[in-house]
Image 1 (cartoon, one colour):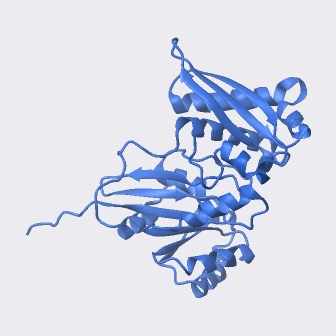
Image 2 (spheres, rainbow, N blue to C red; image 1 turned 90 degrees about the horizontal axis):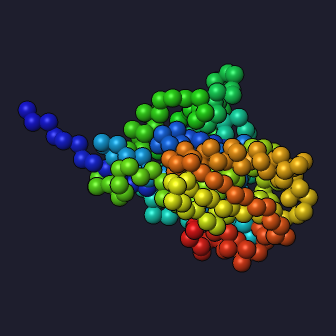
Image 3 (cartoon, rainbow, N blue to C red; image 1 turned 90 degrees about the vertical axis):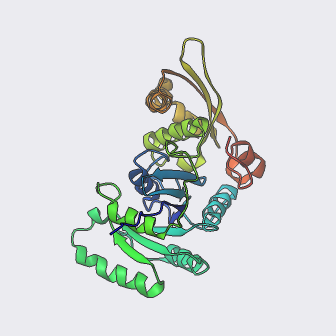
Length: 306
């Protein structure tokens, strides 16, 4: 008896959820690469990031999106638009929820938008490692089942789990048959400049905690390989107030030095070469509220990342 060969599949999956639900952590685990910065600060992801997993059976293209939230400024409006635009022309949606939090207005807001979606939606209850008694999840699952006709519901810990085969198999089955859209060795559409700037921002978020996270932007203005093989990177960090600049520089420049040292190591891993990193801190008052500033920083909804 002849065994029918399984057709290759390829498609797009929008990954949505409230801020800090663990979307980027989950995607990094699924594709086996670090494509987006991860922080415990809400609204870490600001642009739509394309992340790619290529296997023998399929190519899954994940659209990592900013957390859906009520925007408070122009930057927030851009982030919400990027998330909502990701729901268009995809083959499936992965809705990631923090299982430790009660369902509130934020989830209701997202569920209302999902009613317009015409493709299968899989609900992922994340961070279940933080729940002592798993039976406490049952009321949450029941409430979501009553609120929306999900294609499937899964519970997991993006941080602690190591086997995501059930989720990947489910997503693969939802993809249309067809060839890959991208080369097999490509795992993100982000340029090295964008990834380097995000690495620097990740270190700022981790080291400064709640003092400057949402008021900071990073832009790599120059990134080139010199004759000695070293990669020269010049980046500007933008904040809104002089006091925030002082925090980033730190006593005798120690904070900026630590940010630079940690970022340089990760950028070296990214480019596979030694890196000379030069960072400047600049003040741009109310940059998050100005469309022209957002456009220059590559954060406007009608701007392609540099």
